Length: 306
Image (cartoon, rainbow, N blue to C red; front, side, top):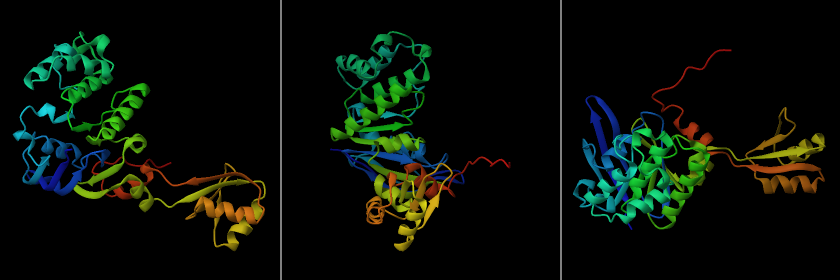
């Protein structure tokens, strides 16, 4: 199958460097989440991969070839960068038929992707009557039209309702399961955590991380254990005996930082401490992301004094 390979990629606009010597690969068979604050260079990088901008230096290839050298590119690469790309006066079906004809894709695929994306019943309506979520679905339909091995999606959940978010999540997992290469840019951390296997994180155009998602979280968020008990004194005594500190919360539970649930459960059991709750808190992608990018955001809001 086909990978995306970025090597020493740099893009400058006048004196501003939007992409700064990036090197990474997006491999088949997994969903790669592409993360970073606003202005980090994610969209620029995607445009460089798709040949929509020319790099100042470095290369971005798909299966070892530049996108511009691909004949009938929709058969190789599907992309959603702008939900408003379709002409508003065309119907969704006509928009897809034009794309299909230009890439020698059979017309049957138009109806198949309209059905797959939930647009079959509105396929003859003009695109300008579509909501943002419907336009997103149309953009995804266009990306899938040529049954490509590589799919790039920029904020695909934008404008989708809850049912649509579940649908796009399952779609990305299915595409990766079929061995396709899937790169997805998103600002929604919890949503990204639900579908991504691997992460590439940018900050101010530079590479901050290129790692499996679970490793990314575990490297940056302290593991902890959440406990609820009817005998706080016995709990604290037992934990202190083994070098653990417990922090009490107003809600009535306790947190033991830098600990694993198996160890804390064994300690409580040996000390005969009654437990109402014992759960691992391995941290979230959002926590790990903010820990890494706290100093990399180009645009940040002022905290209000209270």
